[in-house]
Image (cartoon, rainbow, N blue to C red; front, side):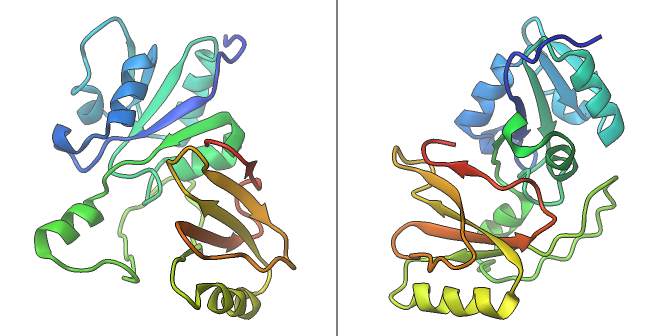
Length: 212
């Protein structure tokens, strides 16, 4: 039986495979976890220390294990980046975004881009992964910073209609801001800004004025 949750659950992107592509933040989250859940391949890289290792990548089983070990600090290890064809999406849907802390990782897409010199900005993603419980993805990520980004983004939101808009500004910096924009708001897309547009049935809206 599970106890009182000691903190948020870490969902950790472990990169494309090579340990040199694991971020420092991912290392720290994995080392701090008392319970690690993931595939045999991922868990085999982190056998040192007194930790509980539980092998599964099935959504239902992962949720059962998290509930059973809710009194301990848990980390779910996923390949690549949690935002790309990952176990993270159904977990966030089931638990809510406030119950998890997602640690991004280097995806195979990024590494393939680096190896080939191909620009993957604006590329269409086609995946043949079949993931249990993964919802259809129709998210749009808008990168700001150009002179006319604000007006072009306003027009894009009007054209799409009915999407939830979440503004992410100064990500990873001390003044990071992540919040939901109102439907009438003209979002300033200057500087280090990314706007996430997603259907209204996505995970619960967020409002994090400080560090995420």
